[in-house]
Image 1 (cartoon, rainbow over the protein chains, first blue to last red):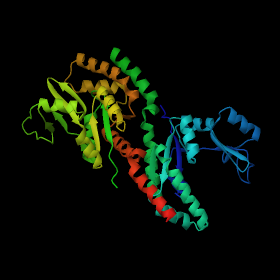
Image 2: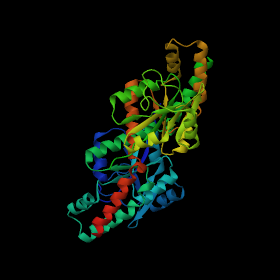
Image 3: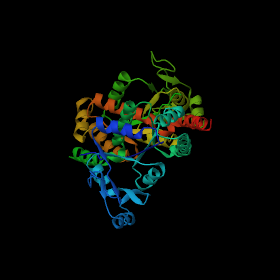
Image 4: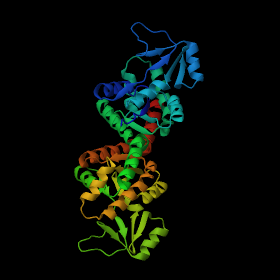
Length: 209
Length: 209
């Protein structure tokens, strides 16, 4: 009996290192599936439909919205981006853990649609570390950095609505902790209902002969 | 900043191996505190007050009941046994994970009093394994075994109210899984509120100078 995977929604301040930790996680651990987003933007050279994105027309995308086929979606610069529910569902059924990296509002919306989803927020070990990381990129003006810090202050207010917090003091240690946390979700009772139901039937058979 | 420990409530069918798994867990892992029960029965030779039990008078025990000083209690053969809330609270504050091994009804009562408590049910890998373990003890009559199996069937109905299921197919692997699961509870957002609040204050300071 295959245990169903978990839908993991990961958020974190800009600059906290979500991308780096996820890269380490995917490279060193088995059992994860990327979520492939649907989009109405045109494929760039080298992008493959169904691998990098599901490329769809605007009409099709709006049909997906109306049909509630998307776990979440957003519109950036005139193009839609969204997470197809059926693709995620298929991967979960196959036993993969699916991680969506989504900003706070989208994450909390997913929790409403999929109560089983596990919401994890990645925090820096301290405020100064976050500031230094943003500064260290060397690509942002002081003004942009100040804006990101203020945004972090705003986002921090919603963190209590998340299920778990992981602190990124070190990429590999954070990835290891994240992996442990995600695997532990498979022990949730709701993930083990098929096993429990089979055991109940067998207990009856063994006892009553 | 010390992370508060978790209150873990473990239940499982008679014969599933809870005691053996907990013994392995306590012997091989750090950070656990036994819960010391209060009782009105007399100390046996060698039993130390505050180590094996807190030995109290019937009057004092009934005062503890009325004062809601107990997480749960029961009366066996004329003696009271209960779990003092203050002792558990102190150990959690010190950063220990406290495991209570309690039967189903008591476990669900604790969840009502302490919503943070984590309820874990230990299951055998199959019904036949449970039957063979009960039989293998060699100390029970067929009648007693049949009664225990029937009791397991009844208890199984309440398992969906537990948070997690661990399967005991092997003592050391089950102890390892239990340990991982218990440690993962420290990543719960509610366990990290002091850290989050400090980070919020620091973000403000770093941003606003």
